[in-house]
Length: 150
Ligand SMILES: CCCCCCCCCCCC(=O)SCCNC(=O)CCNC(=O)[C@H](O)C(C)(C)COP(=O)(O)OP(=O)(O)OC[C@H]1O[C@@H](n2cnc3c(N)ncnc32)[C@H](O)[C@@H]1OP(=O)(O)O
Image 1 (tube, protein in one colour):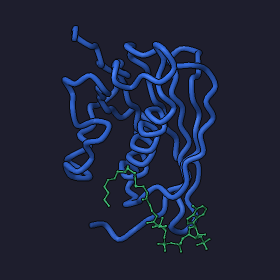
Image 2 (image 1 turned 180 degrees about the vertical axis):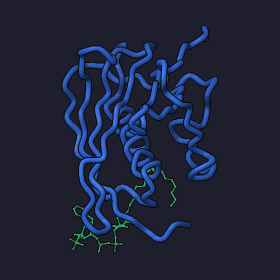
Image 3 (image 1 turned 45 degrees about the horizontal axis):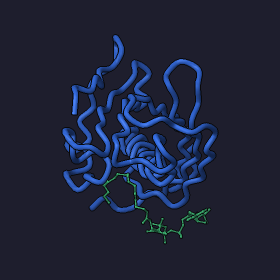
Image 4 (image 1 turned 180 degrees about the horizontal axis):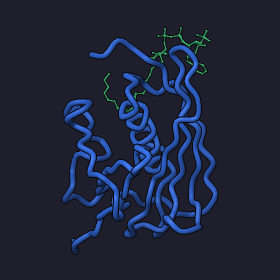
Protein backbone atom coordinates (compact mmCIF):
# COMPACT_ATOMS: atom_id res chain seq x y z
CA UNK A 1 0.00 0.00 0.00
CA UNK A 2 1.35 3.45 -0.87
CA UNK A 3 2.37 6.03 1.71
CA UNK A 4 -0.52 7.64 3.55
CA UNK A 5 -0.06 11.22 4.74
CA UNK A 6 -1.62 11.59 8.19
CA UNK A 7 0.25 14.73 9.12
CA UNK A 8 -1.52 17.39 11.14
CA UNK A 9 -1.83 21.10 10.68
CA UNK A 10 0.45 23.82 11.99
CA UNK A 11 -0.03 24.19 15.74
CA UNK A 12 -1.38 20.67 16.29
CA UNK A 13 0.57 18.62 18.84
CA UNK A 14 0.96 14.87 18.31
CA UNK A 15 -1.02 12.96 20.95
CA UNK A 16 0.22 9.63 22.29
CA UNK A 17 -2.94 7.61 23.02
CA UNK A 18 -1.25 4.43 24.36
CA UNK A 19 0.76 6.54 26.81
CA UNK A 20 -2.53 7.74 28.30
CA UNK A 21 -4.83 4.71 28.13
CA UNK A 22 -2.44 1.80 27.65
CA UNK A 23 -1.80 -0.48 24.70
CA UNK A 24 -5.16 -2.31 24.76
CA UNK A 25 -6.64 0.15 22.30
CA UNK A 26 -5.69 -1.69 19.09
CA UNK A 27 -8.95 -2.29 17.22
CA UNK A 28 -8.83 0.99 15.30
CA UNK A 29 -5.32 2.36 15.83
CA UNK A 30 -3.27 -0.79 16.40
CA UNK A 31 -2.04 -1.49 12.88
CA UNK A 32 -0.45 1.67 11.49
CA UNK A 33 0.85 -0.09 8.37
CA UNK A 34 -2.25 -2.20 7.78
CA UNK A 35 -5.12 -2.23 5.29
CA UNK A 36 -7.87 -1.36 7.76
CA UNK A 37 -7.40 1.93 9.57
CA UNK A 38 -4.34 4.15 9.86
CA UNK A 39 -4.66 6.85 12.48
CA UNK A 40 -2.73 9.79 13.88
CA UNK A 41 -3.95 11.72 16.89
CA UNK A 42 -3.29 15.37 17.67
CA UNK A 43 -4.37 18.06 20.07
CA UNK A 44 -5.41 21.39 18.68
CA UNK A 45 -4.25 24.63 20.32
CA UNK A 46 -7.54 24.70 22.30
CA UNK A 47 -6.57 21.11 23.39
CA UNK A 48 -9.47 19.43 21.60
CA UNK A 49 -8.51 15.96 20.35
CA UNK A 50 -8.46 15.61 16.57
CA UNK A 51 -7.63 12.58 14.44
CA UNK A 52 -6.49 12.10 10.89
CA UNK A 53 -7.73 8.72 9.69
CA UNK A 54 -7.31 6.66 6.56
CA UNK A 55 -10.08 4.18 5.87
CA UNK A 56 -8.33 1.34 4.05
CA UNK A 57 -9.72 -1.35 1.72
CA UNK A 58 -10.61 -3.62 4.64
CA UNK A 59 -13.18 -1.07 5.90
CA UNK A 60 -15.27 -1.39 2.76
CA UNK A 61 -19.03 -1.77 3.05
CA UNK A 62 -20.90 -0.35 0.05
CA UNK A 63 -18.60 -0.68 -2.99
CA UNK A 64 -15.66 1.73 -2.62
CA UNK A 65 -17.16 3.25 0.51
CA UNK A 66 -16.75 2.69 4.24
CA UNK A 67 -18.84 0.21 6.19
CA UNK A 68 -21.04 1.96 8.77
CA UNK A 69 -19.60 -0.23 11.49
CA UNK A 70 -16.11 0.94 10.61
CA UNK A 71 -17.18 4.53 11.10
CA UNK A 72 -18.89 3.59 14.37
CA UNK A 73 -15.67 1.95 15.60
CA UNK A 74 -13.68 5.05 14.75
CA UNK A 75 -16.16 7.33 16.52
CA UNK A 76 -16.28 5.06 19.58
CA UNK A 77 -12.51 5.21 19.91
CA UNK A 78 -11.89 8.84 19.00
CA UNK A 79 -14.76 10.33 21.01
CA UNK A 80 -13.97 8.11 24.00
CA UNK A 81 -10.33 9.14 23.77
CA UNK A 82 -11.37 12.79 23.59
CA UNK A 83 -12.94 12.39 27.05
CA UNK A 84 -9.82 10.61 28.36
CA UNK A 85 -7.58 13.33 26.93
CA UNK A 86 -9.72 15.91 28.75
CA UNK A 87 -9.05 14.11 32.04
CA UNK A 88 -12.05 11.79 32.37
CA UNK A 89 -11.47 8.04 32.77
CA UNK A 90 -14.56 6.75 30.96
CA UNK A 91 -16.19 4.04 28.97
CA UNK A 92 -18.71 4.76 26.24
CA UNK A 93 -22.33 4.09 27.30
CA UNK A 94 -24.21 5.43 24.30
CA UNK A 95 -23.10 6.35 20.79
CA UNK A 96 -25.68 8.02 18.57
CA UNK A 97 -24.57 8.28 14.94
CA UNK A 98 -26.01 10.00 11.90
CA UNK A 99 -24.54 8.84 8.60
CA UNK A 100 -24.86 11.87 6.32
CA UNK A 101 -22.88 10.93 3.19
CA UNK A 102 -21.15 7.84 1.88
CA UNK A 103 -17.50 7.98 2.86
CA UNK A 104 -15.08 6.97 0.07
CA UNK A 105 -12.38 4.57 1.25
CA UNK A 106 -8.66 4.97 0.56
CA UNK A 107 -8.59 8.62 1.53
CA UNK A 108 -7.57 10.51 4.64
CA UNK A 109 -10.37 12.19 6.57
CA UNK A 110 -10.53 14.02 9.88
CA UNK A 111 -12.40 13.47 13.13
CA UNK A 112 -13.05 16.56 15.22
CA UNK A 113 -14.22 16.34 18.81
CA UNK A 114 -15.77 18.63 21.39
CA UNK A 115 -16.58 18.09 25.05
CA UNK A 116 -20.13 19.41 25.18
CA UNK A 117 -21.01 18.93 28.84
CA UNK A 118 -20.02 17.25 32.07
CA UNK A 119 -22.74 16.28 34.55
CA UNK A 120 -21.49 14.20 37.44
CA UNK A 121 -20.05 11.01 35.89
CA UNK A 122 -21.66 11.77 32.51
CA UNK A 123 -19.44 13.34 29.87
CA UNK A 124 -21.06 14.20 26.54
CA UNK A 125 -18.69 14.34 23.58
CA UNK A 126 -19.72 15.42 20.10
CA UNK A 127 -17.79 14.64 16.97
CA UNK A 128 -17.82 14.36 13.23
CA UNK A 129 -15.96 12.62 10.46
CA UNK A 130 -15.41 15.13 7.69
CA UNK A 131 -13.01 16.15 4.98
CA UNK A 132 -11.62 18.97 7.14
CA UNK A 133 -13.05 21.58 4.77
CA UNK A 134 -16.81 21.39 4.45
CA UNK A 135 -18.09 17.90 3.66
CA UNK A 136 -19.44 16.07 6.69
CA UNK A 137 -19.77 12.30 6.35
CA UNK A 138 -20.84 11.30 9.84
CA UNK A 139 -21.86 13.05 13.06
CA UNK A 140 -22.15 11.55 16.51
CA UNK A 141 -23.02 12.26 20.12
CA UNK A 142 -21.21 10.05 22.57
CA UNK A 143 -22.28 9.64 26.20
CA UNK A 144 -19.31 8.60 28.29
CA UNK A 145 -19.52 7.47 31.90
CA UNK A 146 -16.65 7.94 34.32
CA UNK A 147 -15.36 4.76 35.84
CA UNK A 148 -12.66 3.86 38.31
CA UNK A 149 -9.53 3.87 36.11
CA UNK A 150 -8.16 0.34 35.61
C1 LIG B 1 -10.98 0.99 31.10
C2 LIG B 1 -9.73 1.42 30.31
C3 LIG B 1 -10.16 1.90 28.97
C4 LIG B 1 -9.01 2.45 28.20
C5 LIG B 1 -9.42 2.79 26.79
C6 LIG B 1 -10.20 4.05 26.69
C7 LIG B 1 -10.46 4.44 25.31
C8 LIG B 1 -11.86 4.87 25.12
C9 LIG B 1 -12.34 4.53 23.75
C10 LIG B 1 -13.05 3.18 23.73
C11 LIG B 1 -14.42 3.28 24.29
C12 LIG B 1 -15.09 1.95 24.35
O1 LIG B 1 -15.20 1.28 23.36
S1 LIG B 1 -15.60 1.40 25.83
C13 LIG B 1 -16.32 -0.14 25.40
C14 LIG B 1 -17.79 0.02 25.04
N1 LIG B 1 -18.57 0.34 26.24
C15 LIG B 1 -18.95 -0.58 27.10
O2 LIG B 1 -18.73 -1.78 26.92
C16 LIG B 1 -19.65 -0.06 28.34
C17 LIG B 1 -20.56 -1.09 28.95
N2 LIG B 1 -21.42 -0.48 29.99
C18 LIG B 1 -20.98 -0.35 31.26
O3 LIG B 1 -19.86 -0.82 31.62
C19 LIG B 1 -21.88 0.35 32.22
O4 LIG B 1 -23.19 0.39 31.72
C20 LIG B 1 -21.44 1.80 32.53
C21 LIG B 1 -20.04 1.80 33.22
C22 LIG B 1 -21.37 2.66 31.25
C23 LIG B 1 -22.45 2.47 33.45
O5 LIG B 1 -22.70 1.59 34.56
P1 LIG B 1 -22.68 2.12 36.06
O6 LIG B 1 -21.30 2.47 36.46
O7 LIG B 1 -23.42 1.09 36.89
O8 LIG B 1 -23.48 3.49 36.02
P2 LIG B 1 -25.05 3.76 35.96
O9 LIG B 1 -25.49 4.01 37.37
O10 LIG B 1 -25.78 2.73 35.17
O11 LIG B 1 -25.10 5.10 35.12
C24 LIG B 1 -24.50 6.31 35.61
C25 LIG B 1 -25.29 7.45 35.01
O12 LIG B 1 -25.19 7.38 33.56
C26 LIG B 1 -26.49 7.16 32.98
N3 LIG B 1 -26.36 6.21 31.90
C27 LIG B 1 -25.65 5.04 31.89
N4 LIG B 1 -25.75 4.40 30.74
C28 LIG B 1 -26.53 5.18 29.95
C29 LIG B 1 -27.01 5.08 28.60
N5 LIG B 1 -26.66 4.06 27.83
N6 LIG B 1 -27.79 6.07 28.14
C30 LIG B 1 -28.14 7.14 28.92
N7 LIG B 1 -27.70 7.29 30.19
C31 LIG B 1 -26.94 6.34 30.71
C32 LIG B 1 -27.35 6.64 34.13
O13 LIG B 1 -28.71 6.96 33.92
C33 LIG B 1 -26.78 7.40 35.31
O14 LIG B 1 -27.28 8.72 35.30
P3 LIG B 1 -27.64 9.53 36.63
O15 LIG B 1 -28.67 8.70 37.35
O16 LIG B 1 -26.35 9.61 37.41
O17 LIG B 1 -28.14 10.84 36.15
